[in-house]
Length: 95
Image 1: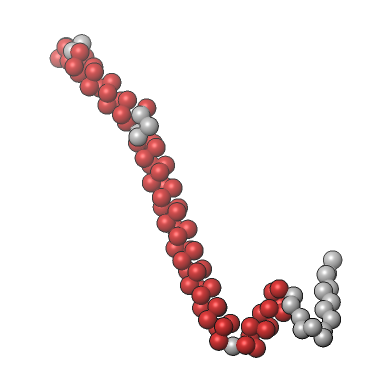
Image 2: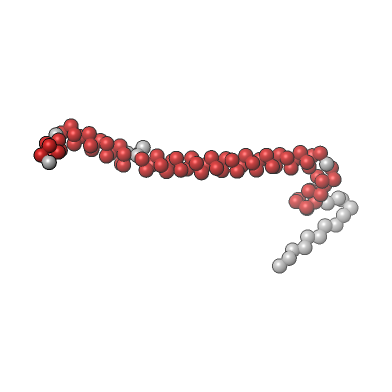
């Protein structure tokens, strides 16, 4: 026990322990901040995968629409409520 007290009174041991405590828990680059940033990085990587898949799906949809004029007309009518000049368009809103 006296051996630990001897080291506990040493300035360099106290300074080293204080510095270690500061770097691990208090500093802006502490372990908790590092863990939070790593978790945020994992979440962003998951989002990246989702958006890359969504982009691939939209590009495939775009190819199909640009290759088929009938499908393009159907899409424009349903999505953007477009019409031919001689037609009347009625939108029914259900309550």
